[in-house]
Figure (cartoon, helix red, strand yellow):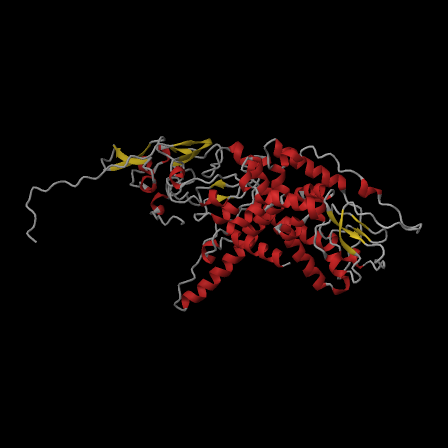
Length: 520
Protein backbone atom coordinates (compact mmCIF):
# COMPACT_ATOMS: atom_id res chain seq x y z
CA UNK A 1 0.00 0.00 0.00
CA UNK A 2 2.88 2.36 0.78
CA UNK A 3 4.48 1.66 -2.61
CA UNK A 4 1.13 2.16 -4.37
CA UNK A 5 0.50 5.48 -2.60
CA UNK A 6 3.98 6.76 -3.52
CA UNK A 7 3.58 5.90 -7.20
CA UNK A 8 0.05 7.29 -7.31
CA UNK A 9 1.16 10.53 -5.64
CA UNK A 10 4.12 11.26 -7.91
CA UNK A 11 2.32 10.21 -11.09
CA UNK A 12 -0.51 12.59 -10.24
CA UNK A 13 1.93 15.40 -9.45
CA UNK A 14 3.54 14.93 -12.86
CA UNK A 15 0.21 15.42 -14.62
CA UNK A 16 -0.56 18.44 -12.48
CA UNK A 17 2.88 19.79 -13.47
CA UNK A 18 4.16 20.16 -9.91
CA UNK A 19 7.69 19.19 -10.95
CA UNK A 20 9.03 22.74 -11.07
CA UNK A 21 7.37 23.52 -7.74
CA UNK A 22 8.64 20.52 -5.80
CA UNK A 23 12.14 20.64 -7.37
CA UNK A 24 12.33 16.84 -7.36
CA UNK A 25 15.15 15.69 -9.67
CA UNK A 26 14.30 13.06 -12.28
CA UNK A 27 10.77 12.55 -10.96
CA UNK A 28 9.69 11.56 -14.47
CA UNK A 29 11.73 8.34 -14.17
CA UNK A 30 8.66 6.76 -12.58
CA UNK A 31 7.05 6.89 -16.01
CA UNK A 32 9.65 4.44 -17.26
CA UNK A 33 7.95 1.83 -15.04
CA UNK A 34 4.57 2.24 -16.73
CA UNK A 35 3.95 -0.85 -18.85
CA UNK A 36 2.55 0.45 -22.15
CA UNK A 37 4.88 3.49 -22.50
CA UNK A 38 7.84 1.23 -21.72
CA UNK A 39 6.61 -1.42 -24.16
CA UNK A 40 6.30 1.14 -26.96
CA UNK A 41 9.90 2.23 -26.42
CA UNK A 42 10.94 -1.43 -26.42
CA UNK A 43 9.24 -1.94 -29.79
CA UNK A 44 11.10 1.11 -31.12
CA UNK A 45 14.39 -0.55 -30.21
CA UNK A 46 15.17 1.63 -27.20
CA UNK A 47 15.77 -1.42 -25.02
CA UNK A 48 17.95 0.33 -22.45
CA UNK A 49 15.05 2.56 -21.44
CA UNK A 50 12.31 -0.12 -21.54
CA UNK A 51 12.84 -0.73 -17.84
CA UNK A 52 9.24 -1.12 -16.69
CA UNK A 53 8.23 -3.56 -19.42
CA UNK A 54 11.18 -5.87 -18.74
CA UNK A 55 10.96 -5.72 -14.93
CA UNK A 56 7.23 -6.36 -14.62
CA UNK A 57 7.21 -9.03 -17.30
CA UNK A 58 9.87 -10.90 -15.29
CA UNK A 59 7.97 -10.28 -12.03
CA UNK A 60 4.81 -11.66 -13.66
CA UNK A 61 6.74 -14.80 -14.59
CA UNK A 62 7.78 -15.12 -10.97
CA UNK A 63 4.89 -13.89 -8.83
CA UNK A 64 2.00 -12.84 -11.06
CA UNK A 65 0.49 -9.44 -11.84
CA UNK A 66 2.49 -7.30 -9.42
CA UNK A 67 2.22 -4.28 -11.75
CA UNK A 68 -1.58 -4.15 -11.54
CA UNK A 69 -1.75 -3.36 -7.83
CA UNK A 70 1.49 -1.53 -7.03
CA UNK A 71 2.41 0.57 -10.08
CA UNK A 72 -0.58 1.00 -12.43
CA UNK A 73 -2.21 4.37 -11.55
CA UNK A 74 -5.63 3.30 -12.82
CA UNK A 75 -5.47 0.08 -10.79
CA UNK A 76 -4.53 2.04 -7.66
CA UNK A 77 -7.38 4.47 -8.36
CA UNK A 78 -9.82 1.55 -8.55
CA UNK A 79 -8.50 0.24 -5.24
CA UNK A 80 -9.18 3.68 -3.76
CA UNK A 81 -12.78 3.57 -5.03
CA UNK A 82 -13.20 0.04 -3.61
CA UNK A 83 -11.89 1.12 -0.22
CA UNK A 84 -14.23 4.14 -0.15
CA UNK A 85 -17.18 1.90 -1.10
CA UNK A 86 -16.34 -0.43 1.79
CA UNK A 87 -16.19 2.46 4.25
CA UNK A 88 -19.51 3.85 3.04
CA UNK A 89 -21.31 0.48 3.11
CA UNK A 90 -20.19 -1.38 6.22
CA UNK A 91 -22.78 -4.13 5.76
CA UNK A 92 -21.19 -5.10 2.44
CA UNK A 93 -17.58 -4.78 3.53
CA UNK A 94 -16.64 -8.13 2.03
CA UNK A 95 -19.20 -8.81 -0.65
CA UNK A 96 -17.42 -10.26 -3.67
CA UNK A 97 -18.05 -13.79 -4.90
CA UNK A 98 -16.42 -16.10 -7.41
CA UNK A 99 -17.52 -15.79 -11.03
CA UNK A 100 -16.29 -17.39 -14.20
CA UNK A 101 -14.12 -14.93 -16.09
CA UNK A 102 -14.91 -13.58 -19.53
CA UNK A 103 -11.77 -15.12 -20.98
CA UNK A 104 -12.95 -14.77 -24.55
CA UNK A 105 -13.36 -10.99 -24.14
CA UNK A 106 -10.00 -10.57 -22.41
CA UNK A 107 -8.16 -12.66 -25.00
CA UNK A 108 -9.91 -10.88 -27.88
CA UNK A 109 -9.05 -7.38 -26.65
CA UNK A 110 -5.46 -8.29 -25.79
CA UNK A 111 -4.92 -10.05 -29.10
CA UNK A 112 -6.31 -7.16 -31.14
CA UNK A 113 -4.19 -4.68 -29.16
CA UNK A 114 -1.03 -6.69 -29.87
CA UNK A 115 -1.88 -7.01 -33.56
CA UNK A 116 -2.48 -3.26 -33.82
CA UNK A 117 0.88 -2.59 -32.14
CA UNK A 118 2.64 -4.87 -34.62
CA UNK A 119 0.94 -3.02 -37.46
CA UNK A 120 2.13 0.29 -36.00
CA UNK A 121 -1.14 1.58 -34.56
CA UNK A 122 -1.99 2.58 -30.99
CA UNK A 123 -5.67 3.25 -31.74
CA UNK A 124 -6.97 0.54 -29.38
CA UNK A 125 -4.57 1.56 -26.63
CA UNK A 126 -6.00 5.09 -26.72
CA UNK A 127 -9.33 3.60 -25.69
CA UNK A 128 -8.11 0.97 -23.22
CA UNK A 129 -4.58 1.70 -21.92
CA UNK A 130 -4.92 2.23 -18.13
CA UNK A 131 -2.03 4.71 -17.89
CA UNK A 132 -3.49 6.87 -20.66
CA UNK A 133 -6.95 6.80 -19.06
CA UNK A 134 -5.48 8.03 -15.81
CA UNK A 135 -3.49 10.72 -17.62
CA UNK A 136 -6.57 12.12 -19.36
CA UNK A 137 -8.56 12.12 -16.13
CA UNK A 138 -5.75 13.89 -14.28
CA UNK A 139 -5.26 16.47 -17.05
CA UNK A 140 -8.87 17.25 -17.94
CA UNK A 141 -10.73 16.55 -14.68
CA UNK A 142 -8.31 16.97 -11.77
CA UNK A 143 -6.05 19.73 -13.12
CA UNK A 144 -8.92 22.23 -13.65
CA UNK A 145 -10.00 21.65 -10.03
CA UNK A 146 -6.46 22.39 -8.88
CA UNK A 147 -6.36 25.57 -11.00
CA UNK A 148 -9.73 26.67 -9.63
CA UNK A 149 -8.50 26.22 -6.05
CA UNK A 150 -5.23 27.98 -6.83
CA UNK A 151 -6.99 30.93 -8.45
CA UNK A 152 -9.41 31.24 -5.55
CA UNK A 153 -6.55 31.25 -3.07
CA UNK A 154 -4.62 33.74 -5.20
CA UNK A 155 -7.61 36.09 -5.20
CA UNK A 156 -7.70 36.04 -1.41
CA UNK A 157 -3.98 36.41 -0.68
CA UNK A 158 -3.50 39.07 -3.38
CA UNK A 159 -6.03 41.24 -1.58
CA UNK A 160 -3.96 40.75 1.57
CA UNK A 161 -0.84 42.00 -0.19
CA UNK A 162 0.86 38.63 -0.83
CA UNK A 163 1.67 37.86 -4.48
CA UNK A 164 3.62 34.60 -4.15
CA UNK A 165 0.50 32.77 -5.40
CA UNK A 166 -0.80 34.01 -8.73
CA UNK A 167 -3.68 33.25 -11.07
CA UNK A 168 -3.23 30.50 -13.70
CA UNK A 169 -5.11 30.54 -16.99
CA UNK A 170 -6.82 27.27 -17.97
CA UNK A 171 -6.30 26.36 -21.63
CA UNK A 172 -6.36 22.55 -21.60
CA UNK A 173 -10.14 22.05 -21.73
CA UNK A 174 -11.41 20.11 -24.74
CA UNK A 175 -15.06 19.07 -24.71
CA UNK A 176 -14.65 15.65 -26.38
CA UNK A 177 -11.73 14.61 -24.17
CA UNK A 178 -13.50 15.94 -21.08
CA UNK A 179 -16.63 13.91 -21.85
CA UNK A 180 -14.61 10.76 -22.58
CA UNK A 181 -12.55 11.10 -19.38
CA UNK A 182 -15.74 11.72 -17.39
CA UNK A 183 -17.37 8.64 -18.92
CA UNK A 184 -14.38 6.45 -17.97
CA UNK A 185 -14.43 7.83 -14.42
CA UNK A 186 -18.16 7.10 -14.00
CA UNK A 187 -17.68 3.65 -15.56
CA UNK A 188 -14.89 2.81 -13.11
CA UNK A 189 -16.96 4.02 -10.18
CA UNK A 190 -19.83 1.76 -11.24
CA UNK A 191 -17.67 -1.28 -12.04
CA UNK A 192 -15.67 -1.13 -8.81
CA UNK A 193 -18.86 -0.96 -6.79
CA UNK A 194 -20.48 -3.91 -8.55
CA UNK A 195 -17.67 -6.09 -9.94
CA UNK A 196 -14.43 -4.94 -8.30
CA UNK A 197 -11.50 -5.08 -10.70
CA UNK A 198 -13.65 -6.06 -13.70
CA UNK A 199 -11.95 -3.52 -15.95
CA UNK A 200 -8.53 -4.99 -15.17
CA UNK A 201 -9.62 -8.58 -15.84
CA UNK A 202 -11.86 -8.17 -18.86
CA UNK A 203 -11.18 -4.86 -20.65
CA UNK A 204 -7.56 -3.94 -19.99
CA UNK A 205 -4.98 -5.15 -22.58
CA UNK A 206 -2.16 -4.80 -20.03
CA UNK A 207 -4.04 -6.99 -17.57
CA UNK A 208 -4.81 -9.42 -20.37
CA UNK A 209 -1.20 -9.75 -21.45
CA UNK A 210 0.07 -10.11 -17.88
CA UNK A 211 -2.62 -12.73 -17.24
CA UNK A 212 -1.17 -14.83 -20.06
CA UNK A 213 2.25 -14.67 -18.40
CA UNK A 214 0.85 -15.20 -14.89
CA UNK A 215 -0.75 -18.43 -16.01
CA UNK A 216 2.73 -19.98 -16.11
CA UNK A 217 4.29 -18.00 -13.23
CA UNK A 218 6.68 -19.98 -11.04
CA UNK A 219 5.16 -18.91 -7.72
CA UNK A 220 1.42 -18.50 -7.21
CA UNK A 221 -1.11 -18.10 -4.47
CA UNK A 222 -2.78 -21.40 -3.61
CA UNK A 223 -4.79 -23.11 -0.89
CA UNK A 224 -3.37 -25.30 1.84
CA UNK A 225 -6.26 -27.82 2.06
CA UNK A 226 -5.21 -29.07 5.47
CA UNK A 227 -5.60 -25.57 6.95
CA UNK A 228 -8.68 -24.26 5.14
CA UNK A 229 -11.89 -24.21 7.22
CA UNK A 230 -14.16 -23.09 4.32
CA UNK A 231 -15.16 -19.84 5.97
CA UNK A 232 -15.43 -18.04 2.58
CA UNK A 233 -13.72 -14.88 3.88
CA UNK A 234 -11.07 -15.03 1.16
CA UNK A 235 -13.66 -15.26 -1.62
CA UNK A 236 -15.66 -12.32 -0.30
CA UNK A 237 -12.51 -10.19 0.01
CA UNK A 238 -11.20 -10.95 -3.50
CA UNK A 239 -11.88 -7.87 -5.64
CA UNK A 240 -10.76 -9.81 -8.73
CA UNK A 241 -13.50 -12.40 -8.02
CA UNK A 242 -10.97 -15.14 -8.78
CA UNK A 243 -11.24 -17.29 -5.60
CA UNK A 244 -13.55 -20.32 -5.43
CA UNK A 245 -13.31 -21.37 -1.78
CA UNK A 246 -15.68 -24.32 -2.17
CA UNK A 247 -13.34 -26.05 -4.62
CA UNK A 248 -10.21 -24.41 -3.16
CA UNK A 249 -9.27 -22.90 -6.52
CA UNK A 250 -7.64 -19.57 -7.37
CA UNK A 251 -7.87 -18.32 -10.95
CA UNK A 252 -4.33 -16.94 -10.75
CA UNK A 253 -4.28 -15.34 -14.21
CA UNK A 254 -7.05 -13.01 -12.92
CA UNK A 255 -5.37 -12.35 -9.57
CA UNK A 256 -4.10 -8.76 -9.32
CA UNK A 257 -1.75 -9.46 -6.40
CA UNK A 258 -3.60 -7.31 -3.87
CA UNK A 259 -3.16 -9.99 -1.14
CA UNK A 260 -6.53 -9.20 0.44
CA UNK A 261 -7.14 -12.94 0.67
CA UNK A 262 -3.90 -13.51 2.58
CA UNK A 263 -4.66 -10.61 4.90
CA UNK A 264 -8.21 -11.73 5.68
CA UNK A 265 -7.48 -15.44 6.24
CA UNK A 266 -7.17 -16.15 9.96
CA UNK A 267 -5.73 -19.65 9.54
CA UNK A 268 -3.04 -18.90 6.92
CA UNK A 269 -4.63 -21.27 4.42
CA UNK A 270 -3.51 -19.21 1.38
CA UNK A 271 0.21 -18.91 0.67
CA UNK A 272 2.64 -18.58 -2.22
CA UNK A 273 3.59 -21.99 -3.57
CA UNK A 274 5.82 -23.24 -6.36
CA UNK A 275 3.69 -23.86 -9.45
CA UNK A 276 4.49 -27.57 -9.59
CA UNK A 277 3.95 -28.12 -5.86
CA UNK A 278 2.17 -31.45 -5.32
CA UNK A 279 -0.66 -31.51 -2.84
CA UNK A 280 -1.11 -34.37 -0.44
CA UNK A 281 -3.53 -37.04 -1.63
CA UNK A 282 -6.99 -37.02 -0.09
CA UNK A 283 -9.61 -39.73 0.22
CA UNK A 284 -12.44 -37.24 0.18
CA UNK A 285 -14.82 -37.79 -2.70
CA UNK A 286 -15.58 -34.10 -2.84
CA UNK A 287 -11.97 -33.19 -3.66
CA UNK A 288 -11.13 -33.27 -7.35
CA UNK A 289 -7.97 -32.53 -9.24
CA UNK A 290 -8.00 -29.12 -10.83
CA UNK A 291 -7.16 -30.14 -14.36
CA UNK A 292 -7.43 -26.54 -15.52
CA UNK A 293 -4.24 -25.63 -13.70
CA UNK A 294 -2.38 -28.35 -15.59
CA UNK A 295 -3.32 -27.02 -18.99
CA UNK A 296 -0.46 -25.55 -20.95
CA UNK A 297 -0.44 -21.87 -21.79
CA UNK A 298 -2.27 -21.00 -24.96
CA UNK A 299 -0.05 -20.06 -27.83
CA UNK A 300 0.87 -16.38 -27.56
CA UNK A 301 1.36 -15.54 -31.21
CA UNK A 302 2.59 -12.03 -30.73
CA UNK A 303 4.39 -12.28 -27.39
CA UNK A 304 7.81 -12.05 -29.04
CA UNK A 305 7.18 -8.64 -30.50
CA UNK A 306 5.38 -7.49 -27.44
CA UNK A 307 8.72 -8.47 -25.72
CA UNK A 308 3.70 32.09 -21.50
CA UNK A 309 1.05 32.82 -22.74
CA UNK A 310 1.63 35.60 -25.28
CA UNK A 311 1.33 39.02 -23.73
CA UNK A 312 1.05 40.80 -27.11
CA UNK A 313 -1.82 43.25 -27.33
CA UNK A 314 -3.13 45.18 -30.31
CA UNK A 315 -6.01 47.50 -30.98
CA UNK A 316 -8.34 44.82 -32.35
CA UNK A 317 -11.33 47.14 -32.22
CA UNK A 318 -9.89 49.12 -35.11
CA UNK A 319 -10.06 45.95 -37.23
CA UNK A 320 -13.61 45.00 -36.19
CA UNK A 321 -15.09 46.26 -39.46
CA UNK A 322 -12.94 43.84 -41.49
CA UNK A 323 -14.00 40.21 -41.91
CA UNK A 324 -11.53 37.92 -43.68
CA UNK A 325 -13.05 35.53 -46.21
CA UNK A 326 -10.17 33.36 -47.48
CA UNK A 327 -9.79 30.12 -45.49
CA UNK A 328 -6.49 29.88 -43.61
CA UNK A 329 -6.21 26.48 -42.00
CA UNK A 330 -3.67 23.70 -42.22
CA UNK A 331 -4.91 20.61 -44.05
CA UNK A 332 -3.28 18.37 -41.43
CA UNK A 333 -2.73 18.87 -37.68
CA UNK A 334 0.62 20.42 -36.78
CA UNK A 335 2.74 17.93 -34.81
CA UNK A 336 4.90 18.87 -31.80
CA UNK A 337 8.69 19.05 -32.32
CA UNK A 338 10.14 15.56 -32.06
CA UNK A 339 7.01 13.79 -33.33
CA UNK A 340 8.91 13.06 -36.59
CA UNK A 341 5.87 12.26 -38.74
CA UNK A 342 2.15 11.59 -38.57
CA UNK A 343 2.83 7.88 -39.13
CA UNK A 344 5.28 7.69 -36.24
CA UNK A 345 3.15 9.87 -33.96
CA UNK A 346 -0.07 7.91 -34.50
CA UNK A 347 1.82 4.62 -34.15
CA UNK A 348 3.31 5.42 -30.74
CA UNK A 349 1.12 8.01 -28.99
CA UNK A 350 -1.45 6.66 -26.51
CA UNK A 351 -2.97 10.10 -25.81
CA UNK A 352 -1.98 10.10 -22.14
CA UNK A 353 -1.77 13.93 -22.37
CA UNK A 354 1.27 14.29 -20.13
CA UNK A 355 2.74 16.61 -22.78
CA UNK A 356 -0.43 18.73 -22.68
CA UNK A 357 -0.20 19.02 -18.93
CA UNK A 358 3.51 19.90 -19.00
CA UNK A 359 3.48 22.35 -21.94
CA UNK A 360 4.30 25.80 -20.46
CA UNK A 361 2.57 27.72 -23.24
CA UNK A 362 -0.47 25.39 -23.50
CA UNK A 363 -0.05 25.24 -27.27
CA UNK A 364 -0.41 21.44 -27.13
CA UNK A 365 -4.12 20.65 -27.07
CA UNK A 366 -6.28 17.55 -27.34
CA UNK A 367 -8.00 16.73 -30.61
CA UNK A 368 -11.13 14.78 -31.44
CA UNK A 369 -10.97 13.20 -34.90
CA UNK A 370 -8.46 15.49 -36.64
CA UNK A 371 -6.07 12.51 -36.86
CA UNK A 372 -8.86 10.15 -37.89
CA UNK A 373 -10.93 7.65 -35.93
CA UNK A 374 -7.80 5.63 -35.15
CA UNK A 375 -6.09 8.69 -33.67
CA UNK A 376 -8.74 10.20 -31.40
CA UNK A 377 -7.56 12.52 -28.59
CA UNK A 378 -3.96 12.65 -29.89
CA UNK A 379 -2.44 16.10 -29.12
CA UNK A 380 -1.72 18.73 -31.75
CA UNK A 381 -0.29 22.25 -31.84
CA UNK A 382 -3.17 24.71 -31.52
CA UNK A 383 -1.92 28.15 -32.46
CA UNK A 384 -5.25 29.75 -31.58
CA UNK A 385 -4.32 29.15 -27.93
CA UNK A 386 -0.63 30.05 -28.08
CA UNK A 387 2.59 29.30 -29.94
CA UNK A 388 5.54 26.95 -29.36
CA UNK A 389 8.20 28.65 -27.30
CA UNK A 390 11.52 28.87 -29.17
CA UNK A 391 13.60 27.97 -26.09
CA UNK A 392 11.46 25.02 -24.92
CA UNK A 393 11.84 21.27 -25.61
CA UNK A 394 9.99 19.93 -22.56
CA UNK A 395 7.41 17.78 -24.40
CA UNK A 396 10.10 15.53 -25.89
CA UNK A 397 11.91 15.17 -22.58
CA UNK A 398 8.78 14.08 -20.71
CA UNK A 399 6.99 11.88 -23.30
CA UNK A 400 6.96 8.32 -21.84
CA UNK A 401 6.21 6.42 -25.06
CA UNK A 402 8.74 7.91 -27.48
CA UNK A 403 5.97 9.42 -29.61
CA UNK A 404 7.73 12.78 -29.14
CA UNK A 405 11.47 12.18 -29.38
CA UNK A 406 13.72 14.25 -27.11
CA UNK A 407 15.52 16.95 -29.05
CA UNK A 408 18.49 19.04 -28.09
CA UNK A 409 17.53 22.69 -28.01
CA UNK A 410 19.74 23.55 -30.98
CA UNK A 411 18.13 20.73 -33.02
CA UNK A 412 14.64 21.74 -31.97
CA UNK A 413 15.30 25.29 -33.21
CA UNK A 414 15.72 24.07 -36.80
CA UNK A 415 13.05 21.33 -36.78
CA UNK A 416 10.42 22.45 -39.26
CA UNK A 417 6.92 21.53 -38.06
CA UNK A 418 5.34 23.31 -41.00
CA UNK A 419 5.73 26.22 -43.38
CA UNK A 420 4.28 29.69 -43.03
CA UNK A 421 1.67 30.80 -45.54
CA UNK A 422 0.62 34.42 -46.09
CA UNK A 423 -2.78 35.38 -47.51
CA UNK A 424 -2.55 38.96 -48.68
CA UNK A 425 -6.29 39.40 -49.14
CA UNK A 426 -6.83 38.63 -45.43
CA UNK A 427 -4.26 41.12 -44.18
CA UNK A 428 -5.40 44.42 -42.63
CA UNK A 429 -2.44 46.18 -44.24
CA UNK A 430 -3.72 45.50 -47.76
CA UNK A 431 -7.44 45.65 -47.00
CA UNK A 432 -7.69 48.49 -44.49
CA UNK A 433 -4.33 50.19 -45.12
CA UNK A 434 -3.49 50.08 -41.43
CA UNK A 435 -0.22 49.26 -39.70
CA UNK A 436 0.11 45.88 -37.99
CA UNK A 437 3.28 43.78 -38.15
CA UNK A 438 2.36 41.48 -35.23
CA UNK A 439 3.50 38.39 -37.16
CA UNK A 440 6.97 39.70 -38.02
CA UNK A 441 7.46 41.13 -34.54
CA UNK A 442 7.19 37.71 -32.88
CA UNK A 443 8.86 35.45 -35.45
CA UNK A 444 12.01 34.04 -33.75
CA UNK A 445 13.77 33.03 -37.00
CA UNK A 446 12.85 36.09 -39.08
CA UNK A 447 11.01 33.92 -41.57
CA UNK A 448 8.46 36.75 -41.63
CA UNK A 449 9.68 40.28 -42.23
CA UNK A 450 7.99 43.53 -43.16
CA UNK A 451 8.67 45.10 -46.56
CA UNK A 452 7.40 48.41 -48.01
CA UNK A 453 3.85 48.27 -49.31
CA UNK A 454 2.80 50.77 -51.99
CA UNK A 455 -0.78 51.96 -51.48
CA UNK A 456 -3.26 54.40 -52.93
CA UNK A 457 -3.34 56.69 -49.91
CA UNK A 458 0.41 57.17 -49.98
CA UNK A 459 0.89 56.03 -46.38
CA UNK A 460 4.24 54.67 -45.28
CA UNK A 461 3.04 51.08 -44.82
CA UNK A 462 4.81 47.73 -44.55
CA UNK A 463 3.37 44.29 -45.34
CA UNK A 464 4.60 40.81 -44.36
CA UNK A 465 6.90 38.83 -46.63
CA UNK A 466 7.63 35.18 -45.80
CA UNK A 467 10.65 32.92 -46.29
CA UNK A 468 9.56 29.31 -45.86
CA UNK A 469 13.16 28.09 -45.79
CA UNK A 470 13.70 29.84 -42.45
CA UNK A 471 10.29 28.97 -40.97
CA UNK A 472 10.14 26.28 -38.24
CA UNK A 473 6.33 26.30 -37.95
CA UNK A 474 6.24 27.42 -34.32
CA UNK A 475 3.09 29.51 -34.80
CA UNK A 476 4.57 32.68 -33.30
CA UNK A 477 3.30 34.54 -36.37
CA UNK A 478 -0.12 32.89 -36.57
CA UNK A 479 -1.12 33.29 -32.93
CA UNK A 480 -0.98 37.12 -32.65
CA UNK A 481 -2.58 37.80 -36.04
CA UNK A 482 -5.67 39.88 -35.13
CA UNK A 483 -7.73 39.06 -38.23
CA UNK A 484 -10.92 37.01 -37.78
CA UNK A 485 -12.37 34.56 -38.63
CA UNK A 486 -9.57 33.55 -41.04
CA UNK A 487 -6.09 34.74 -40.21
CA UNK A 488 -3.83 36.41 -42.72
CA UNK A 489 -0.90 34.16 -41.87
CA UNK A 490 -0.85 30.53 -40.77
CA UNK A 491 1.33 27.41 -40.55
CA UNK A 492 0.75 24.62 -43.06
CA UNK A 493 1.74 21.34 -41.38
CA UNK A 494 4.55 19.12 -42.63
CA UNK A 495 3.32 15.49 -42.56
CA UNK A 496 6.97 14.57 -42.03
CA UNK A 497 9.15 17.05 -40.16
CA UNK A 498 11.92 18.73 -42.16
CA UNK A 499 14.92 20.87 -41.30
CA UNK A 500 14.81 24.62 -41.71
CA UNK A 501 17.76 26.81 -42.56
CA UNK A 502 19.44 28.53 -39.68
CA UNK A 503 18.66 32.22 -39.55
CA UNK A 504 21.51 34.47 -40.58
CA UNK A 505 22.56 36.68 -37.71
CA UNK A 506 24.03 39.90 -39.03
CA UNK A 507 26.48 41.81 -36.95
CA UNK A 508 25.34 45.34 -36.30
CA UNK A 509 28.07 47.78 -37.15
CA UNK A 510 28.18 50.98 -35.22
CA UNK A 511 28.72 53.93 -37.59
CA UNK A 512 31.84 55.91 -36.89
CA UNK A 513 31.21 59.46 -35.84
CA UNK A 514 33.10 62.22 -37.64
CA UNK A 515 33.05 64.32 -34.50
CA UNK A 516 35.77 64.08 -31.93
CA UNK A 517 35.10 62.11 -28.79
CA UNK A 518 34.14 63.92 -25.63
CA UNK A 519 37.10 64.74 -23.43
CA UNK A 520 35.42 63.13 -20.42
